[in-house]
Image (cartoon, rainbow, N blue to C red; front, side, top):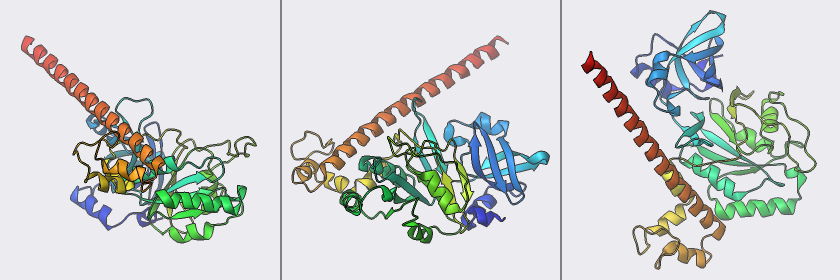
Length: 354
């Protein structure tokens, strides 16, 4: 096992040198369990924690390691290690943290490609695809749509789904596959490159674990029987894990996501809905919301059926989410800043008394 087998490259090595990390070993985080990490190095796998300084200096979740990170660490006996630094990330896939005010959840880092996995039978939802696509576009990650369970529908339905995707999503590869018959696997295997990192994004039960098992040639993730009422696998992945495939590709499996709240996605929305953003430059009003304004070029395009109405409505929904997240994030930062000032003033008062 070499670092290159884990995806190490010249850019990462340059960052290591620039940060003067010669005295540390280098490894990659392959799984995370409540702020305890499994890190893989050339010597093997280690159970790792971060230093107290890292914990004290952390301002938010993005300052902690995540699956896919390259880290500088010190290893010890009994397969334990201490993480001292996180090397700069080439990409971060993240979403709004469920039920947490103004917080983000990191899904994975240093990803080259994301498989956007949807089942072709009952789970297919093109609005959700646009949502995953927006997250990828804001994260500097190249998306690939994987349509699973094609053995459960006929060829006509597959054709209809593919056409609906092409009508709303441009320039993104779409690969129909069956985890049962292995149809389509020859296409996926030609896409996966040695040393490149891929992750899977999708809801529970769409076949991500079966896809991982088939690509790896091993039963790495347990799957259960298919529910007769939903046609979905009952078992879902419970944690993120980085796995090296037989052909040298690197794949990160993720738990199914019921909610996919977008975060920090101005660039992502612009790329996903590029036609809407291009037309908006010609709207009568600079602050046009594209909802009720006279002279809105976006509304005109929707009325002329030049823009899909469902896609337009999905864009408006995600734009509202983005603005709400930005406002809650700004409010949280203000509260944190006010709290910091209060602590500082409190310490000043104690010092004066002494």
